[in-house]
Image (cartoon, rainbow, N blue to C red; front, side):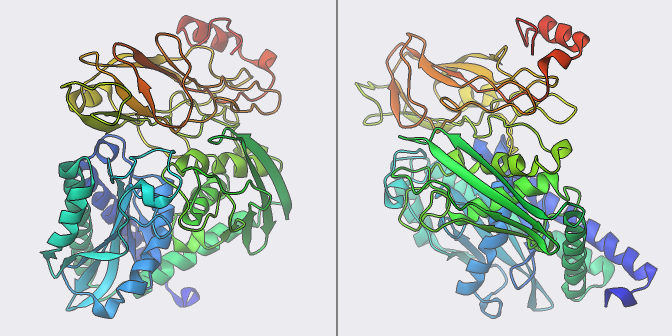
Length: 548
């Protein structure tokens, strides 16, 4: 059919496709601007997209994270198994936070809503956000089974024909530490999809479209063909890489092979470590999301991300491995492992397309949960204000071909650092320091990105708990092509005691928490670095010895 279209038909379809991308971006911005949780409102830890009635993603918003976007692309089919299109009604909204159906842990809620036109469904909108608390042990790596990690909602109708499921909402409110924020975020998810539906109907009115079938076929076929064309430019073969990271109680080996063929990329994690006994296991949907994202960073990055382009990348991981654990494995801190998958995939592709692949970076977020309240800390909390807050911060990115690594920037997640002013406004904490960590980027012709240093204390001097999910403390980011390794991360008290990188611990009364975030690996011979750039780094206190 594509070959029979006139030039004007193809131009019209492209205009409609561009409009659909604008629709989903407005959908995402509606979520960011109405969300209660700082994770969504300040850090952009969300996703939004439009799907056809078979659950295939047609368009995704630019705003959002790969872990949410690419898992959402798979999640919608699970909703359709429970709620087929013929059973849907206007005003419906369905929700789940099941880690194996959604984005890998209970803190992420995915909402799916139908869009109706002339009395029948024509599309689905979906969105995801990270809520601050889901009960249980709280967000962290300490759980031994998913049952400990919070309340698990299977695909369920939050609204039916516009009527709110008050029973479900009351169960959630009774099981979380921040009921107002969680309820507000769920309403924001509903509103986000409603904005998408309204804008889609306006677009279909403008172009006189009774349905999206023809546009959807054009989007998926064009994206698949475009991605295959990019893949076929690579030399066929199998390219391998492995990396070791800290884990919880023992190091984890991530082993990957990337096979390039005429019909796509096959990414296989055979040989990767088995399941952990703690909450750093990665449900397979999240493994697929970040492995495919790693490949897309280097291969066909300009091809739109949807079911057509994603279908050319096939990901496998042995069942029972840390990248494909069956329920009821603990998975709350799945990002602490999953964020390394792009580094692993890019390390394999670097052997064939080195000009497109950065060195390893800090990768995993340094996003501790900070808590205060009776029973949450060792010792007496007194009458200090109870609180629970999840802050998002990042170390340095790996050096890029031809460029330094990005400083204090979250790759691969893409979330923004949470502003100190916001953190202090919603929790009884004082952030005494937030600054670049000099010399933390690996040396090289292009240096790795710098980490940052943060120092945090309780505003009244009370003890508080920290639940870190950190890595790169024992296994820093590796440099490439002669570049140096990035600096390892450090977590300690101002009084001097070293803390573990994972697992809830107490900051004693009057003490402060210090986080020194890891830097990215360097690239190329440090002796080849531009002397003027060295001098500039020294002038700006980014390096002290000037060999960055």
